[in-house]
Length: 183
Ligand code: CU
Ligand code: ZN
Image 1 (cartoon, helix red, strand yellow):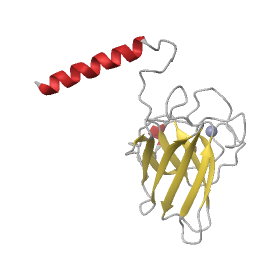
Image 2 (cartoon, helix red, strand yellow; image 1 turned 90 degrees about the vertical axis):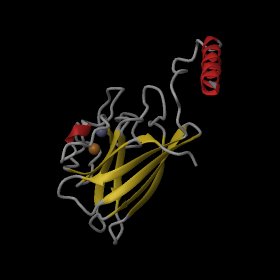
Image 3 (spheres, protein in one colour; image 1 turned 45 degrees about the horizontal axis):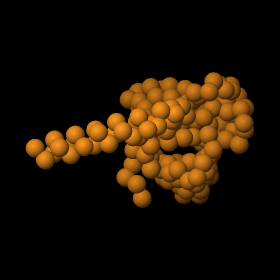
Image 4 (cartoon, protein in one colour; image 1 turned 90 degrees about the horizontal axis):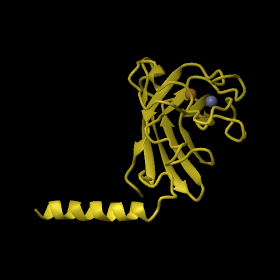
């Protein structure tokens, strides 16, 4: 009974908030504080694993990466792909690069790039990646939202120019981006 009243009040509050703000295009959308993707190895890459966190910081999204088990001193293409589906043994179920604005593939610092183009990760002598970057194309909500997409780490370097995917080769890690517990 009490729970029904609380839900009723929440609905009324939600409705009044909506009627007060018809201008905001995405005002029904939840904007999470943090997102997380646990990266699991594709077939044949057991032993590699990682995690990526995403946090809104001002008008940018802070991307924090930890990966272990890679070959030492190696470079790996790193992207957000279109579908949050890592079910295929080779990771191809995640589709192509997340590209809602229909641009060409590029480097993270290019104006012309896929939203998902995060460039490369470089492992240290122990095969570990610790990397952090603030990106201005990723978003936590709206048309460029990465919620429900996938993070892919590739076997090879992204050359940042070849179309449509930078020639980064096979997919070694895949993780679906979901809502994280906020810090
Ligand atoms: Cu990729
Ligand atoms: Zn791309």
